[in-house]
Image 1: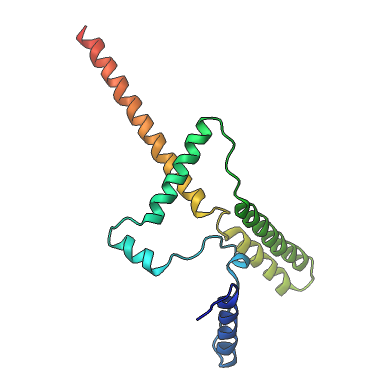
Image 2: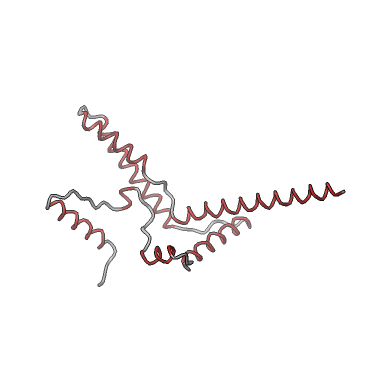
Length: 167
């Protein structure tokens, strides 16, 4: 089977249309339109992780984040990641479009339009933050590194106090 980019979305839309035709409420909006940035996790990776095994892809991602931290500490400019810029641009555009629609509907005299405007604004407010999997991994590792550094400082302080008490 030769699946081209965009085919799965077309299939989802056709499936949703067929369900609608049969009286079943269904939608097939693209992730970006819903404010979702991260892709779903493949079943294979999920099953491997559930077994408690380490996935090589995960190890590589952690190494990349650690290399970024080392480079940052050494004063190097961050690596260019144009795909992250495109994600941010797309999400900014999508969110602005939703809010523009809400603003226009809020100006309507129709109470139903005004209510829908409130629901759209709430929907945009509930969209997940514009963070990729790498951003979340950076935050997690940064927190772990800070916790480890604080633990080390407490241990060193305790040792210094013990040595001072022995004198």
